[in-house]
Length: 127
Image (tube, rainbow, N blue to C red):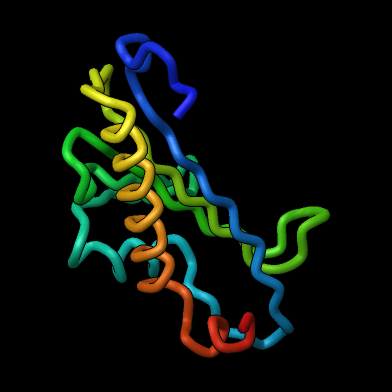
């Protein structure tokens, strides 16, 4: 609510990084497999140079996103998922509540993608 003059806010970004511990032998989806899993719902492309799935559009107007899947990075054993959602270009928000709604929608979209790609056995083990 402390956004002040909303006319100065011209874009939003939300990023979640999830480090999921797992034991050896788990069959985890790689980035290309994740792209296949979500391509039926989201228009996306795979950027092999960044090992990243680019969400060309999301369910939020004028918003794009990305997903990265990293297995056992140095100092971070496990599976790291990085989700990013951001406005595509400068956006003028009409009110503070419209900004808060954007973040609520972005969070919900990230959770929807998480649920599509993380195997149920891992979700259950995290509970």
